Length: 168
Image (tube, rainbow, N blue to C red; front, side):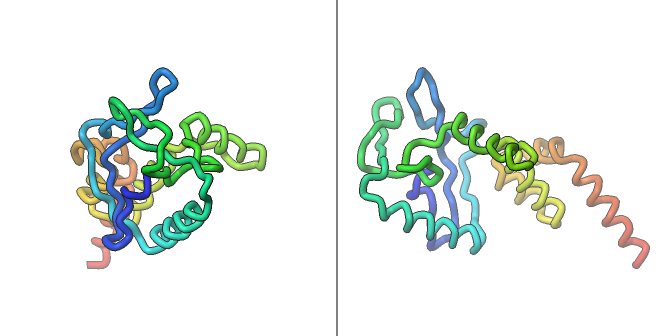
């Protein structure tokens, strides 16, 4: 994502593109299954992003990009990525995986970036968030995808909710 995708006034993030690497060239494409969406952000994340943006804007020599032919990402001065390597370079999947792997040397369990998405969904569902809200937030094509992937959580919620019947 780049900074124009974040609306600090509306507390939202627009998800309408994904970064793809093909033949050593980065391109923007639409999210899979046409899952463009607006995700609303909490105050903690907004404050973090606001401070991150202020820090990034301090560096005149940070790498900036623009959109070229066929939605390729080329050097330019139109935008900076939110999640970037030092100096503003593109944080590729390989780079992110290497960074996460470095934590195993510190005794931490190794995880993939996609595990963060699963953790986010797990937290939302286990805290009673509406399943349709979670579906839209994650960009699942339909609620069945959300239910099928996170079925174990919905069963746990059913069990805990059914226990409340004893108090009625």
